[in-house]
Each structure stands twice: as structure tokens, then as C-alpha cells.
Length: 104
Length: 104
DNA sequence: TTGACATGAAACTATTTGGTTTCTTATAAA
DNA sequence: TTTATAAGAAACCAAATAGTTTCATGTCAA
Image (tube, rainbow over all chains, first blue to last red; front, side, top):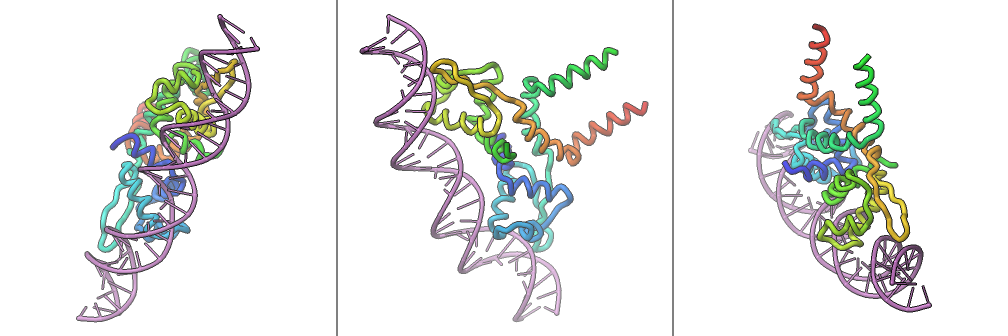
């Protein structure tokens, strides 16, 4: 799973919205697309990109396709982000405070 | 600073690379663009998008434009990510372990 | 003050992206 | 075994993206 596929997947607001929706449980394509203004095929494309990014997994149940959040896929983003923690003043301050609190 | 501008900014590998480069200190446009195959105007466009996303700040020094990382801009991403922590098995396991350790 | 240097700006291009419509296929239910 | 439902697939389109080339502007230095 290339890093780029994940960043690409989360770059679109509709896809981030779908991820939020799926956080409350798996849903069929129809259930998902009914929540958006766009057509079903458009949502299908978003789901494909989310799947390619490893952020959802898909299974078939009868004629339905059920989509579930796969939050482990976000580890790539989390790792990338954490590199910058050391340059982030607020985080540094928090860390400093935590260390000082630890010393008391 | 809209959330979308940040996610857009980090969606491109060149821009993420520039952020990494700037983590070791501010740099002029020439210093940055000399590290990439693409032309200087192309890099300028990437820098503009990073600036719009609040991920870098730019200042002038003489005829130079110095670009510095502004990692606070990543807070948006960090916040968005942290929502999904609760659904992330590994994190959940860590939390569980931490709670259990706390109980001892 | 002339020339070199660092950057900005504009116009253009190819590709990708996000969307549509139309048609087909697979499965469930009457 | 029809009929309705759920989804896939393909062809198409407009706009955004990532890049280019060319030219203009501002600033430093000889």
C-alpha cells in the first residue's frame, strides 16, 4: 500500500466524510450513496479509491457490497505526522510539561 | 484555514517532500527548487499551495523569499486523525494495556 | 548605473479527477 | 420464472492539477 494512495484517498472531502460515516458500522453502496448528492457511480469511484488506500475493506453479501472502515490504513498518515511532532511548538511544550511533571 | 486546504496541500508527494526538507530549516526558493527535477515556477506553485494550507510561512530577505515550516498547520490533520483512534485496534489495544497497567 | 541574480506572473498544455449517463449483470423475491 | 433490486462497467465531459516556456520586476553588487 503506497503512502501516496493513502494521502490521495484522504484528500477528498467526500471520501473523508464516507470514512466518518463508516466509523459507525459497515454499509452497502446504496446506503452510502443515498447520503450524497452525487450519483451512485460517483460514490463507487470514491469507494474504490478508499479501498486502494487501504482505508476500507469491502465484502459481498448477496447482491450487496458492504463497506467497512479499516482504520489501520491511517497508520501511514499517523507515522508521517509524528515525524513533525518534534517541530511542533505546542506538542513540544506539552512534552516539556509532561517531563517536568514527571520529575516532581 | 479550511481543512480542505491542508489535506490538499499534503496530498502531493513533492509537497510532503518539501515539508521534510524545511524541517531542517528555512530555505529560499532557489535552494528548494534546486533539489527537484521540475522547473522553478512549478516549485513556486507547490509552495503557494503549502502556504495556503498553513503549512509553511514565507518572508522576504532582500531579493530572496525564505520558506519555513509551520508545523502547527498540521493540527488540522492531527485532529482529524485522532477521531479514528477509537476505531484503530492497535491503539485500542495500547489503551487497554495502559489502563490495565494503571490498575496494577 | 549597469549587470547579474532571485523571484513573480502569465499563457499554455497534458493528464488526472470527479462527475455524469447509459447499459449490463447478478441476485433475491413474488 | 419473471420482475425488481443492487451493483458493475464503459464512454463521455468539465474542471482542476502539475507541469512547461517566456517575459517582467525588484534588489544587490561592481
